[in-house]
Image (cartoon, rainbow, N blue to C red; front, side, top):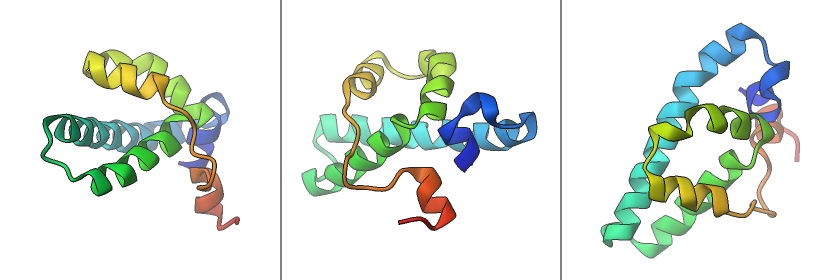
Length: 102
C-alpha cells in the first residue's frame, strides 16, 4: 500500500490489484462522511478528523493517479471538495506511517 500511495506507476500489478479495493472502499467511506457532515448528522469535531484523513490520503501522488482514473465513481460535490482541498502539514504521509518513520 505504501508503494501504491506514493507512486502508482512504480508499484507492481499485484500491489495495485491488492490496493484497489482498499482505496476505493476508503474513498467511499470518505464520501459518506462528507455527505453526513453536509446534512448535519456528523458532529463538527468528528468531521475535522475525517477531513484530515481524507486529505492525507488524497494528497499522496499515487492516490492522485488512481483518482484520475476513478473520480467519476464519486458524487460531483465530493469530487470538488477533494480536488480543492489542501494537504495536511502536521500528519505523516501514509507510506512513512506504514514504514514506522517519524
